[in-house]
Length: 56
Image (cartoon, rainbow, N blue to C red; front, top):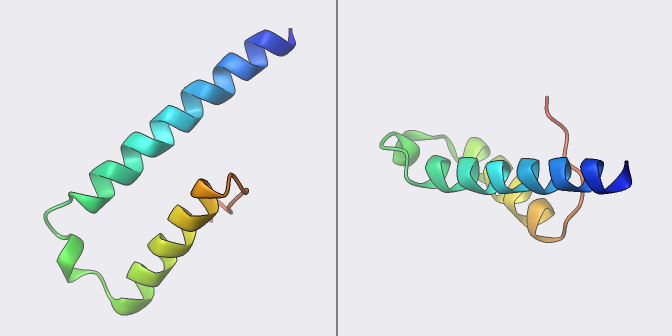
């Protein structure tokens, strides 16, 4: 059972990495506010440290 959960978590992690990449390549990315850019940077840093981040 633990292996199944671990595999699902790995898939989720890959999806988050893909989402992050798409956000960075989004055509409107340069139009984000300074606050929004800082929030994205913070989420990216948390992901790199493998910390949890809020989905709100």
